[in-house]
Image 1 (cartoon, helix red, strand yellow):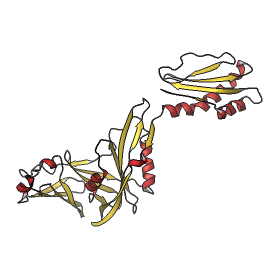
Image 2 (cartoon, one colour):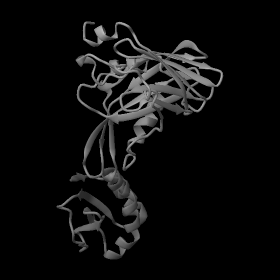
Image 3 (cartoon, one colour):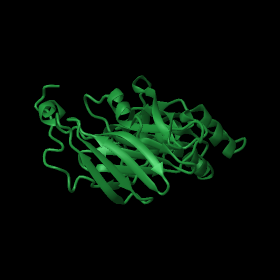
Image 4 (tube, helix red, strand yellow):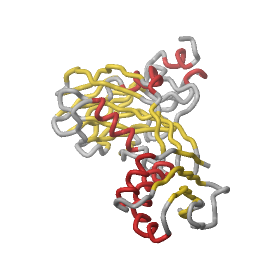
Length: 304
């Protein structure tokens, strides 16, 4: 429940202007939402006057007015003046946790040459209209040269490591003239490709726009679309054999190039096995070549 009491001088000025030189003012305003909200409407002269604002909301103002006819002239002004109070109390509230902001420069590819982009993760605390509290971690990738940026978010969880995330994104970002493309190696989707054509003048401005996104209600279950490529359909047996400490660790992208109208990637598993992947311009799988590391068994046995 939200509630409050204010000596609302701005509101008194608004209502006094509405009736000209008439002797009229409001000395006190009380508002609230919740199970204890007023359900009565009272308007005797000199007594509190209640406006009902469903669901379960009220505003009470103590007036001093010469007669009830004055109320008719100022009622609309009163409602307009306090509408912002109600709207603010009932809207989703978003708080940026500055202490959780993480920024890092990571490697990227432009014209098949190494370059760098800015990666930033932030933490936002969202309280919806029902009072439910959730925390999210938006991730932003920004290219200062082209001003292209990509962003997505996930629900915050314990033991999250921004350093680990930055390492996962290193050398997986390709900067084309008209779009930013991110290739992600995933346990579930194997290889996921996302594109973005969004641009902003700075990373800080992009961050501000991202924070405002969380004022939406309800929040979308996901924000960005991606294409999933299953390049492991015909992988050799034990290609992904891992140590116990490597469980759920996907192969890492170690090389990314654009050749003509094809994408060429190399991914390396934890045990040293390698897959060379070729995709067409629309990210459809063309071929996969697997190279098995002769020492994979030893490495897979956790001798590393």
